[in-house]
Every structure is written in structure tokens, then in C-alpha cells.
Amino acid sequence: QAQLVESGGGLVQAGGSLRLSCAATTNTFPNYGMGWFRQAPGKAREFVAAINWIGSYRKYADSVKGRFTISRANGKNTLYLQMNNLKPDDTAVYYCARAQNGGSDNDSEYQYDYWGPGTQVTVSS
Image 1 (cartoon, helix red, strand yellow):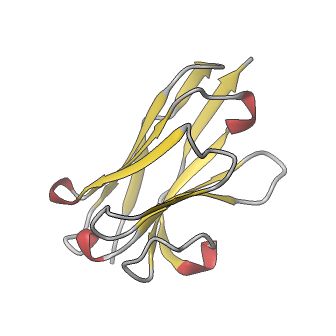
Image 2 (image 1 turned 90 degrees about the vertical axis):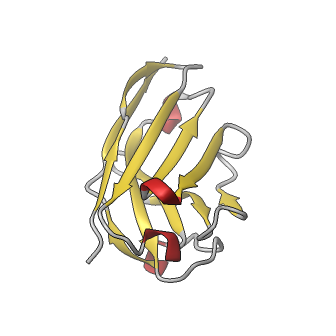
Image 3 (image 1 turned 180 degrees about the horizontal axis):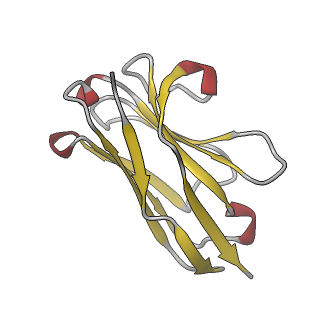
């Protein structure tokens, strides 16, 4: 059973950057696509980015395209999300998740079976 733990969240001013990490406690990490989602207060959880098993294909939500970069280090069982030019609208709890397959075309939460507890990102104006 996979366990995922996010880290790297915090408080940052608009225009700043943060790098989120997601550590997976499983040797099967390299076999699956991974994704990042976020949930702002009072809103539904939404897709942010996804990456395939080897890191050769990525998919982004339009709202973060050009500002966020998803990557992975399979040798370290770790997923990353580099967030640049942050905006107050990016404020949310960010979750990493493991997809049910090895692809990157996974933009629905129903395509993921394991989730981390989340890390808070707050962007001040």
C-alpha cells in the first residue's frame, strides 16, 4: 500500500516561488503516473498537473500553465511541483496523488487511488 507525504508549503508573497515535494513510501512509485491537485476554502478539489511514469509527458491546468512545473525523481521515489510567479488565487491545500495507470492524461481525481494528507500554500497580495 502506497503512502504519500507532501512538504514544502508555506506563506509567500505574490510573485514568489515555492517548491512542493511528495515522498512516496513504496518501491512501485516508478510504475505509476502521479498528479497534483489543490483545494481552496469553499471550493471543490481541482486538477493542477500530472506526469507519466517516466516523466516524459506532462499535463497542466490552464490556470497554472507556464508558471508551474511538475517533475519526478524515480530513484528517490519523489514527486515535485515547482511553482513560480504565485498569485493569491493559488492559495489552497495542495495534494499529491498516485494514478491508477502509468500515463499523464489523468486530470480527474477519480483516476487516482492514493492521496497524501496535503500541504498548505498561502499567497499574500
